Structures are given as C-alpha cells and as structure tokens.
Length: 193
Ligand SMILES: [Zn+2]
Image (cartoon, rainbow, N blue to C red; front, top):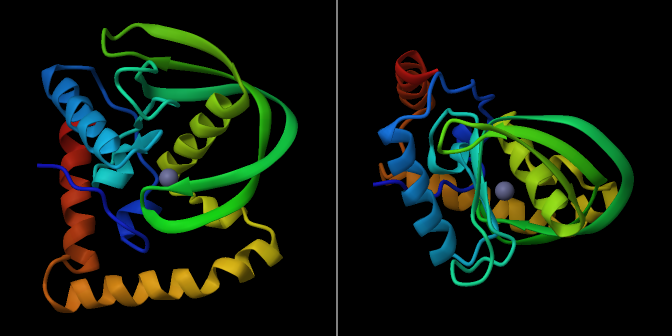
C-alpha cells in the first residue's frame, strides 16, 4: 500500500536512480500511484512522493481519469528547454501551499512508457509545467526551492506548520527515523535500479 509522503519527509530530498527495467511490479506501482493522485485531485505524482527511490512520475493535467490522458514517464530526460513563464503551483506533498514558480515555457522530454518503449514528448503550457515540477522531484528538488524571496516569505508559516506536524507524526512513531528510511531506500535501489 503506497501513501503520499509530505514535506519535510526525507525521501522527498532523495535523488532517484533509473529503473533497470519495466516489469509487472512497476506497472502495479504506477496503477497505485494513479489511484492516489486522482483521489487527491492531483495533476502529477513522482515516485519520491510515495516513498520510492525510482526515476518515474505520472501526469494527467485534467486530474481526472475520464477526461485527460494519464501519461507515465520512466527514466525521463529533458533534452531541450525554451522560454520562461511564471505561474502558480501546488504539490500533493504540500497540501496547503500554492505559490508562483518560474519554469521553461516549452520542453522536449524523452522517457520510457509502461510498454518499455522510449517516447519523445514536445510539451508546452501547463503540461510542460507539471512535467518540470515532477521531474524536479526525481532529483530531490521541491517547488519551494524555486520560489522568489517574497513568495518564500508568504509561505513560511505554512512550511513551519508542516514541519511541526511532521515532527509530531515522528514522535508518535508514524514515520521511521532517517537512518531507517535511508536503509529502506538503499535496499529498494539495490533490487530495481
Ligand atoms: Zn510535487
């Protein structure tokens, strides 16, 4: 059973490694990730956000399986970026926080799909933004890292509240200690990356 981890969970800062292959277990993980994302009305979800150290994320910019297309990006590489555009973003690991982030306007990204086939995507607009946000997750980069000083100031209190909530969960034993989390990630990596 996968669960979405919230800031400041350490797996969100983990730089993930490419998966060695796309097999049945990867397909099950992706199915579960789509279920979680749609239940939270999210437009994107990265493996780090479900406490897995794999270079994999999903996006559906309609946040609805009946409307948009759910796209899986495995071992993605952004090869081209152009233009800059600023717009508001949120993140399922920061449930209450929205803030403006500058992103490339257009990108070219290649990634493997669930059939194990490499596909090139030329993206712009909100789709390109969502993909760049998720891509950052795979390197342990969070959207709060890209805020202007004034935007950062405006979300500071919510961040502190989330940090306190995380500490509380940890004290209740709901979240393992850092060394245990690191050991689990290393074990998963040794099996699949
Ligand atoms: Zn996010």
